Image 1: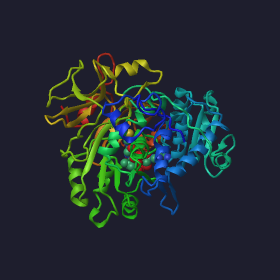
Image 2: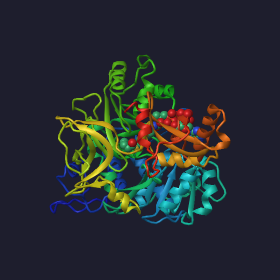
Image 3: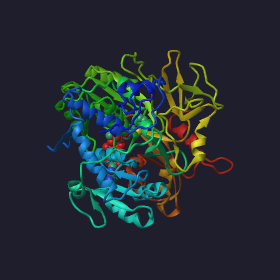
Image 4: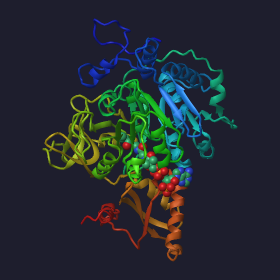
Length: 565
Ligand code: BCO
């Protein structure tokens, strides 16, 4: 297969493939981006070549299990030919064209990886979503993105069917299931008959590759768009120094397919280094299954949210003998130093925390070889220049608390998101002076280590999920018992923080049993929007604190929850 990336130096042959060394040099700002880049052609197909020449150890590219005895193991060669078949499904019977947006709502099944790589091969814009999304969430995503196609599993079908008529841009529904469904094309059937011959599209480095929906304090989730190179090249150093991966490693990154963490740990960082991506279907998280998996399979590298480690250290970990585990990572929410200590005491393994967000990927990390300061998120990851800034975008000295920010000017880092699609105001609002501001507050110490303090806005980070209070309040207000509500974070020993709703009841519900009504409201939110957002705590109040202009003072409620004056 002809690689699409080009060398930049005149003395190099035009079509000589880009190498890992080139990607590292680009991240170190020692080389500029190639004009064209395609992860499938320039990375995956190169590993396939290396398999053939014996330059890569015999290690699958993807290893999937479901805990019921089913298993899939693909080499890069197999991943290549199967994803070419999937690419032909998307372009031929589905009729999709380069630049079209494709919503992909699939659980952790091998087809998610096939469709992902097929989108790269065809230049389609991949938009992953968690299977926890509800009809209203899916409707918003399909309409906002003008998606041409949705690829979904069976459990998502009823929700999609209920909103189909309101999505005029949606032309194709592709079902990944052994069963067929009226009005849906069958991925399995089309895949069987699809050709494995496909020429990878020569995508531009800055061409859109993926869109992630990300929550903020107000409004519906924004569409953070990433380019071919921001995702495809931007995680080279993260894969090498944070994940510490080599082509002989097997990484288990337990993120849901809907989040950028799946892209980082289960696609880009790992495959850039030629490592094997291990996946457990695990429809419902369970600590016993989790620990059994680590004892059964030769997983070398583990990445999971701090909430998972908080759940695991409740168990007697000394009873388990992990087969090959040597490197453990965490990110998505702050890790408490006690958990790091407990994990180390029980397993003998360090826990390397990384910090990032959908828009920027991983920007700080405890990288292999660096001293770990428990409670710190580590040092900046190249090529980012991470600083703490004040409200005017001025850099603050070490030890001073401010907002965690990334330098954008004069050179915008290539691994940064391109924009919030169709939302120039929100895109512009993230820029302060020469910096992009993350919305997180923190401190940098004299050694360049970053320490997380909290959100600068009302966004709630619970179990690694980024939850906008407005989305939960909008769901609550649909219930007849709710006159108004205010949703804030509340501390939780396992989930770090949880969603708490302060609710003012309508007259007919004022005398309801509070426990029963709490359950009813929780159930209502779980049905109305993705269940991970549901308020795990509910308090009924006669009124909400407000400013003179009538704006709800969420910060007063939050400070009260966190015991702050
Ligand atoms: O805890 P509950 O049982 O009360 O509620 C759970 C589920 O049971 C419930 N639910 C799910 N599907 C449902 C449903 N209820 C009714 N009907 C359905 N169909 O909803 C609640 C969901 O909560 P959960 O997802 O936290 O579940 P769980 O099982 O407690 O999982 C724990 C974790 C830790 C495995 C999970 O929270 C998790 O995966 N967290 C990590 C999220 C993550 O990957 N974040 C990274 C984002 S990307 C990023 O941060 C960029 C920077 C690196």
